Structures are given as C-alpha cells and as structure tokens.
Length: 135
Image 1 (cartoon, rainbow, N blue to C red):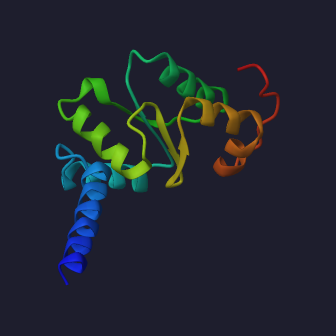
Image 2: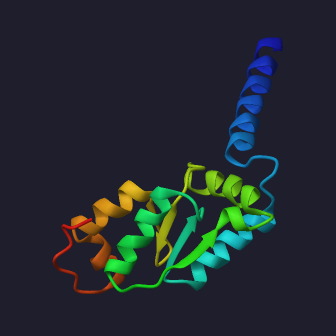
C-alpha cells in the first residue's frame, strides 16, 4: 500500500514538473492569450528582436515574396521577455524568430528559409513564387 502511494506521488510530481517546465512562472495567461490572438488575427506573424540577424533574415524572406508580416519586436516591449517565455510553452522554443502563417507554426529562421527555398512557404501563403534561390 505504501509503495503504491509513493508511486502515485512520484507520478504526480513528474506531471507537475512537466507542466511547470512547459509554462514558466513568468508566462501568464495574458501573454498566451496575446500570442494566440495575434496569430489568429494575422496571416503572417513573426516574433522577433530588432537587433537579431536571424530575425532580419526571416523578415527578408517575406520581403522577397512581397508579403508584409505582422512583426512583434520583443526587445521593444516591456512584456517581451514574458511573451518569449510563453512562446516556449507553446512551440517548445524560446529562441527568435518564431514564424507563424495562417495559424501554423513554421519555426525559426532556418525553417522559414528552407520553406521559402522549397516552395512550401509560397504554397502556405497561396502565392506564386519563383526564382527564390538567392537568399
């Protein structure tokens, strides 16, 4: 009986630790709500930092496609770090950029560039894009 209780306690503690790791204490439901609403209300969303070269590269991809993403510059917001923590809970990564198209998580800079080069990005955007080997 005591072993069974100990096993249950361990299982509960493991579940709690997984939940805590997925949603850091600084990430409140308001940040998660902000992320979800932003993604739902915009065709293309990039969570970025203005000084980040990888973010610039991801934004350049959309410029090449003549598409205007909705960009959230986390370093220019008071709650940027909290939003970044919430992103980790949602997509499993805290790095930037994090790109979403039509509500679908594309990934970071390398993922976006790869999708651009193989034509998947144009397909997701519903546009014709040729000559995209230059980035």
